[in-house]
Length: 528
Ligand SMILES: O=P(O)(O)OC[C@H]1O[C@](O)(CO)[C@@H](O)[C@@H]1O
Image: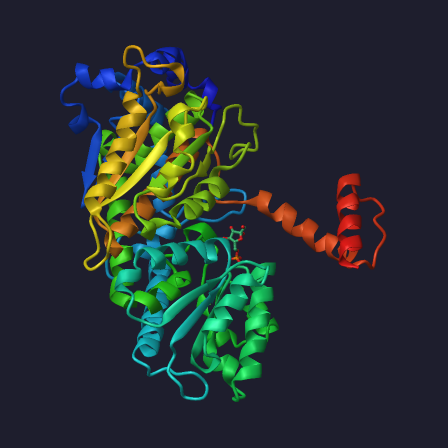
């Protein structure tokens, strides 16, 4: 694929850049009374309002021409068809096949469909057995706690979903342990009765240092505390693509649930990696999550470009991040239930698209993934919103709101929604009435999207997550990069392995850079 800058459609947008920057977003509403209708997309209880972006209809057409020139639709179709689009690793990226309802044809080849259906059946049986107490701990006690041990994609998705859907959780309490520092592990073990605890060791590679260290600790805890020889067989379930390493850890590969190389870690919550979700909310809830995501997949595959939600969200992000050079994006959900969304999106967006070479290995000359950050509103309003309103950097914001609160939950939805809408309004309108002093002036004309959900159900959440997955894909397609590898993360993992003997003190710091040698020296001095 040729470089973005060599694409005439990109050149046309570059020519328009100054006028886009100078454009008054609020003024666009005066020019076009139908602006909200024209610049919003609604799909099954999910609304994307991108009318507060500096887009005219002509600029949108220019972005759509760019999408055509970069063959976004063709790249999408190749992904959905299971072609080897992860070229550096020679793999498909078929997470969409994981959420196809049983029996629906045309989304993956027969072998893949069979593998997905069989894994889903295994998950259903296992979750049902635990939730109905047919499957017990090794000493016959019911399972009341599930510990999910995993990190990155083997943690963030299930954690996000279960936090979001906690009001409908009716199974065992699910806990997550990702960090290596022992704090999460200690807190979790203190809350669990070992005889009533099921452990999921979730790792595609089954070699990730954090997950393996935590798995060793928890397995030792089970062995110490549960008087049954078969405690590990009964109470530990590996979920992985690497059965040899399951065996090496002393677990039975026959008890493992599968992962496949055609599902990237950060796209894997829809696979057996989501077993923790199913334990918490049940198979029907999990299927509804998949159904919502599949609805978004169909929309992405079939909706016309101008009303295609992931496509437009991706193009707006390219406009802000690449064309206008806005190098970070804030995500602010107005519900604590989505408090984990930002962390989830950091991995999804930045691990997928934090790249500086294209698929052919050529250097990329324009900015790729912007930094994603944020926290829930309204607390975020009392932390970083000052900078959003008056800081020197323009940070595009994705606001996320939920119209119908969960029955029985406290809180004032009216107050919350008023705050949500007021913030995007304030960013756009600013404050500059006559006579106002400089310190109180807000420049305004700051862009945002608002995503409004009718309610936070499994189906809506599935659609929301799939929307961001596809937005990430659209950006990668425009830039010409492979969103499905992550070699940058590997470098540090290898160096950590090499540094361990040095830090432990058994080795001289020869050949190590001065800063690292100095840090190791200080650490050793303070550990003495
Ligand atoms: O599931 P695994 O193999 O333990 O990997 C965990 C995570 O580590 C990474 O490889 C790098 O952070 C992610 O892509 C992945 O989600």
